[in-house]
Length: 212
Image (cartoon, rainbow, N blue to C red; front, side, top):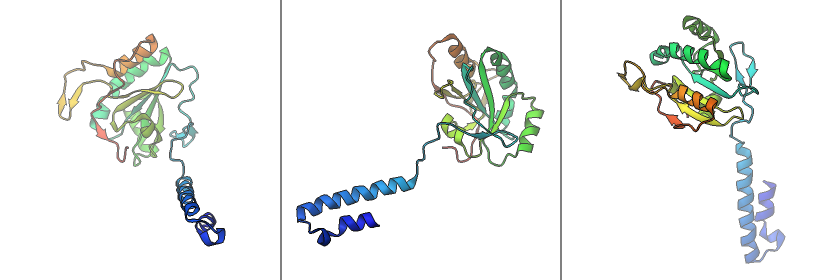
């Protein structure tokens, strides 16, 4: 590269040994800078664009009047995820009218819009739906399984990610009923202006392929 030739051609610049060390250092720094620029900025964009079921790109964080934004990650063929459908419907019904915005997110690449529509009809979901095959939301929400929830404040700050409740203690270990309703507690705390009891709780479910 032209910059490297400039720095490394000591004879053309008539460098002393001491100056040569300085220029070698500068050349190294310049090369590193160019490599970093060439690698691209891998940070998530400030404004996410996620597809809905029609293929339209939407920004799910555009909710000026919302007190919080809740993403619930589900999949069509995960038994644990499907068993949470009644609780998801109940939470949506209870909190949507209180200023909480909900999105149902399908992160698996192999789930087509047609399969998702069939699933939402079968389980009577009335939440707005997003597809996240590129895992932009998965990464931002720090989720790894379905079902898993993530709660953001309107400015985009993640305040909770993890289980919906503790009905599943582990794989194959299910309580008759939940004794801790984590997602409900988070939304209650947001509405009441209280401090959250915890920012995360391990979710039990089906792994999201290639989730980071």
